[in-house]
Each structure stands twice: as C-alpha cells, then as structure tokens.
Length: 266
Ligand SMILES: Nc1ncnc2c1ncn2[C@@H]1O[C@H](COP(=O)(O)OP(=O)(O)OP(=O)(O)O)[C@@H](O)[C@H]1O
Image: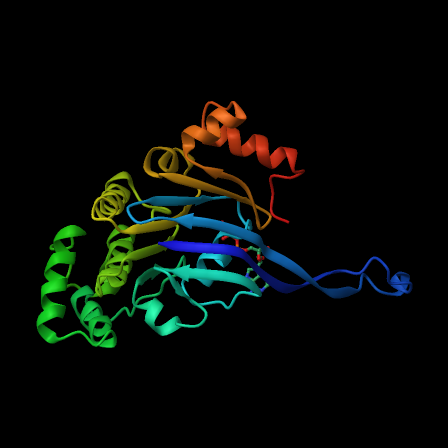
C-alpha cells in the first residue's frame, strides 16, 4: 500500500522580470522564482488496486512519481510504502517498488536477458532465482521472440516491455509506472495493460500516470486528477462522473481544468 500525505516539491524557475526599471535598454530581464510543481498532494493506493494519475503536460505527474520512485526528495510531506516511512527506510522500501521512469534508457549492446540478469544481481538475487524470474517475466511480458536479441534492434513496444520487465525482476509489491503505454500500438499496450490487471489480481498495487483517459476509465480502480501540481479530483471513475455530472473522464477533466483557468502548462 502507498500512503501519500501533503506531499510538496518546489523547483526554482527562471521567469521574465516585469519589475525591471531599465528594461528599455535591454530586451528583457529575468529573475528566479520558486514554484510548487507538486502542491500538497495526498492519496492512498491500496493492495490489489490500480490507481491512475491523470493530468495535462506539466501538471506534475512525473515529479510526483519520481518522489515515490526515490529519484527526487520531497520538499515536504510524507510517503509510506507498505507501512514504512519512505524517507527513513529508503533502501528497505525501494525493494518493495518497481519504478518505471518516463525516459528509461536501456543499455543498447546487451540483450533483455542480460539486462535482467544484471538487475537481478543488483538486487542480490541468487543465479537460480534470477533464471527462474526471467523465465516467468519472459512469459508474462511475451518476450520469448526477442529476449536474446540486442536491445538496439528491438521495436518501441519490445523496448518498453523490456523496460517494464526490468522493474519486475525482484518481484516488488508495488509498481510505479510513468506513462507505460505512451506511444505504443494496441497490441503492445494490451500486453502491458493485461500485466497490470494480472498483478492487481495478485494483490499488488499499481500506480501509473497516463494521458489516455479512456484507458484509465476502464482500467483504474481509482483516479487522481492533477492540475498545476494540485489534486483537482480523486475517486472511482463512477464517483467522479456522478459527482460532476460528466459522461466520461475526458469531459470531466476539461470541465475541472477550465474552471481553474487554463488547460495548458503553467
Ligand atoms: N528539475 C526541474 N527543475 C525545474 N522545474 C522542473 C523540474 N522538473 C520538472 N519541472 C517543472 O515542473 C512542472 C511539472 O513537471 P512534470 O514533468 O512533473 O509534469 P508532467 O505532468 O509529468 O508533464 P508531462 O505530461 O508533459 O510529462 C513543469 O512546469 C516542469 O517544467
């Protein structure tokens, strides 16, 4: 289970300085300002649940998932993974997580099997367990045809399945996936969606971000909609549609984001 409480992440960004008095002499001056990319976010994702994070470009989805994946340190707030405080027991907690970042780069000159073996060794698994785990993963992710080919020769869908396979090698309890189906054809995205459903049935927790509202509507047990770093809606698709009298999540999202002033990145 993942419990997130009042999570914030601020960054420094460069903006135009409208207060500059001498601006007639220069094109424009800039200044640094702090802004909240993730603003006071709280939610729970239980065992056996798929929770979807939806939001437009720049909403803060990746920043939120990177904090949960242990890549970024929160500015404030709490994260608990399987009851453990993430910020205190980071190394213990990380073993419970399979984190897929949005821009995963794989070593090109090795095969998926070699990659999975390297990661199995990093998790200090025995040779026997690594081999067993690779056989299972290869079957689940339908990788038999390409598991011994060089990664540089794989298609986009095969590469993405390899990236996800890398997150599975140590059998984590919780999956955190940043846009796992982005840019994939229906067959490749189906194998990833089927995988998420299967893991949910096995009592695992899946938290993932997506721009595909229709996919989230049918797949997710609960939805978190984020806009400009803040949660603007949280609940089951049914609850949200009833509460806001919307036919689907797409209309609902457009409605909520428009009410808050903008549909584009801040
Ligand atoms: N390291 C950083 N330094 C400064 N600003 C950052 C940094 N990382 C992200 N941001 C800013 O934080 C905001 C949220 O970015 P984030 O990548 O989390 O959005 P997103 O919802 O994942 O967008 P997308 O759907 O386009 O991937 C954006 O305004 C982005 O420019």
